[in-house]
Image (cartoon, rainbow, N blue to C red; front, side):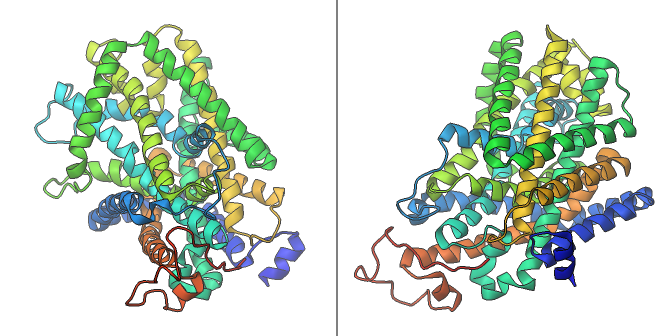
Length: 539
């Protein structure tokens, strides 16, 4: 029946994945529009249960995956390439980094770069810390870097590495289900694999929709500051529709013409904004604070990575850390596939080092300039920044820029950056969802990519109308859990495949259980790092 519907609509998809994902998303929208309060309340209850009973699982999983990736990078598997042994990267390091940044957390940094440090400075999460104190400022920066540093990029790097390895080295389809081939065998290309891909599609849809919702709130605040545009649900829906239309145009152009050019433009604009704040802000204070923040971050990381508020009964970790991890995990399928698409030819060591440390370094600079400047603005009493942020986090960057010269110009530049980040996030996600919902031997139809771009906009608008920021946080914290489990299985499957690859066994031998004999392969049957594995041709 689904195949007949596909033919009638002229689509090129895996019907079980495409129509199931689209159907679940449509059902959510149809339910949330007339019953917005009931839906928001239900997800609030579900989120509370997840935080109370499984919050520790989020914390442990992400920290364990960070250790796993670092271990792979320094291990004997670090020299294995994502592709044939003689392959080389498709993009230069600079282009690769700009695409990583724009498709990853550009929108998030614009929203939280000022809001989070100021929030923690005014309301410290640790007992015995005086609000507005030197200790509160130091802790605020440490927590912000924890939330947006190595842990965030671990969640992106894990699926990106696994997808790139299986796609380029073993010729498997670039879908999440392919990562489970060492575990599921041929079942990875049937209903079991389709179920995995449906989870990935839904996670991507709702994760990106959450980001679009936050971006819309911030964009509305910026337009209100610049032009007096009212902050209402109607205005926000119009903004989502407008930006989704821009994203649809970009996604129709494809990866190289659309996403790459927008990514390169936006990194330049972001650097201009950074340079402006650094130049007109407290430059020496920023430089000193960044150096100190690096030391504080790495000093606190070992215990902070496993901190679960065991002896405190507050809602802080659910509202911040668990929300961030679930949100990032929901993005993981899309960002992972996107990173894999642009990482062919790199070694595992290069991939892990680049994806973990380069964006983290940029995050340090971003929070160092915006976060430290915002904290000093609050300490000096120039603006009641903390009060405004606590009332509405989306106004944070615009309220912050009022403390500097050319505030109108800087705010206008911020609006442009937000719009482009908004666009690159949406069109990148649309390209990836289209890949997840069709066979790799089928053409990528423009109308399918545009459909997924529109779906993200509709879901974002629905979530905003159903409860704003609270609804965004509750939905994503709940829906991130299934993919968190998939990340663990993903690491297991990758390690099994790498062990077989290193020993000189094919993927078929791995699946059939013949890849782990008691005696290692001899030098006559296998030479280190020159093995080109047997491919498995599955669409």
